[in-house]
Image (cartoon, rainbow, N blue to C red; front, top):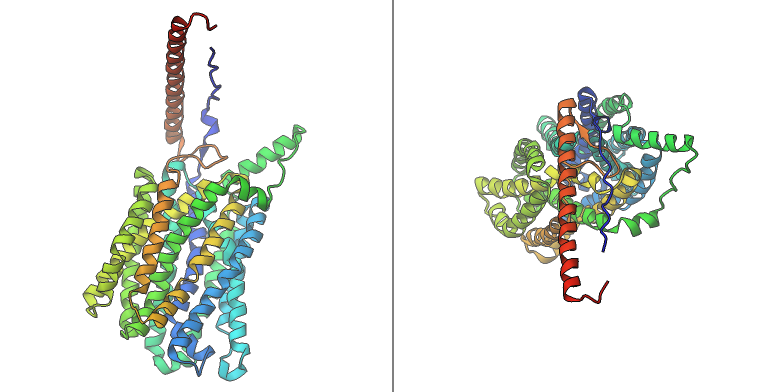
Amino acid sequence: MRLRKKRIKPMHINDITIIDDSKLKKAITAAALGNAMEWFDFGVYGFVAFALGQVFFPGADPGIQMIAALATFSVPFLVRPLGGLFFGALGDKFGRQKVLSVTIIIMSVSTFCIGLIPGYATIGIWAPILLLLAKLAQGFSVGGEYTGAAIFVAEYSPDRKRGFLGSWLDFGSIAGFILGAGVVVLISSIVGETNFLEWGWRIPFFIAAPLGLIGIYLRHALEETPTFQQHVDKIDSDSRKDIAEPPKVSFREILTKQWKPLIVCVGMVIATNVTYYMLLTYMPSYLSHSLHYSEDHGVLIIIAIMVGMLFVQPFMGLLSDRFGRKPFVIIGSIGLFILAIPCFILINSGVVGLIFAGLLILAVLLNCFIGVMASTLPAMFPTHIRYSALAIAFNISVLIAGLTPTIAAWLVEATGNLYMPAYYLMVVAVIGLVTGIFMKETANRPLKGATPAASDRAEAKEILQEHHDNIEQKIEDIDAQIVELEAKRKNLTAQHPDID
């Protein structure tokens, strides 16, 4: 009986990518700014939904106006998978940097255009139609925005800091929400409620233009990620050696060969984004419309919650580099299931302090998810299909999660039960828990299809030493298995001499 030792390829110091710190900072800033702009629009839209309902859907019952405005927010999610397919394929073929430069242009222009659309009183049915077209353009571009930005940051980050650095992407999301909400509150307080409904609501959308210009400048100046550049160099090297280029990966192949990470990705995104949209998009409307709470006070509470989330977010990413990503997904899911109803009891209490406490608990649980999402998702797929696969899984999931504000508002209106959003979150928590149990740990490991990445040469030497130690341990394990199998063979031979 023979056991052949598996050949283990040794690694050298030059096989480890040293990440340039200045380029890394620029990459994170550019990616986070684009994401901030995406969520700036979401934040503005959620906080001015009451105004948009009156401007674009006049004559309807206030509850129907709110649902219609939130439905216009949700419908663009239908085209996000198409945008993901389109930009994902381009990103895997031409690079991440080029695609991210295009998506931020489409996103800023479509957001700016919302501020230009006349109301229903001026152009009739064309008003909501044009609003929907602008939101569809946003949805198409956003289909490639978050996934591309997450991949960009992940492929630029050293393996040991990917959680911390990736967390800044959703830091940008929260900052965008705060900026959007803050702008709405500031403009509303300056111009008054009447003027805000007439023309003030347009101003926040106009701010997208300068933000977009800054984002375009930063992204255009970036270099391609080291990981994708290695992939391109390998293809060029193989072609010079007369080795055929790798075959193009079809949508069908991604589904059949990557179905396990795709399912995990879908579960994680649903758990994260349903909680996200419930807390940061739907809750302002819930507080003002369903609980008849002062709009200004409700907005200020949400803004305070988001400011607190800004401080927690990088801390979660930092801890995930030390303890792993899985624990945060599992803890966040269990906490959401157990605490959803108690949180809504506090929110429905009518006492400011208790309302704040309920929202704060939900916010910390949300941080458990978003603190690790940007570093976890890109690590699930190999380099040559990372953008396409992640864009498919992410945007199918967001298609479901994006309906959260509309469904939550409809459930409350239809049942009259103010705890329906809590039940909704409990269902999502179960999805998150199952996802956390089955997902593979990716912390402190190289991305699939990429060489290890380090912050500096000293860290690269540590990684190299750990690699050599692991090889020695594997060899010792194999030797021990050989000895054990040889002992079993001798024992069997002694018991059955007739067996060769």
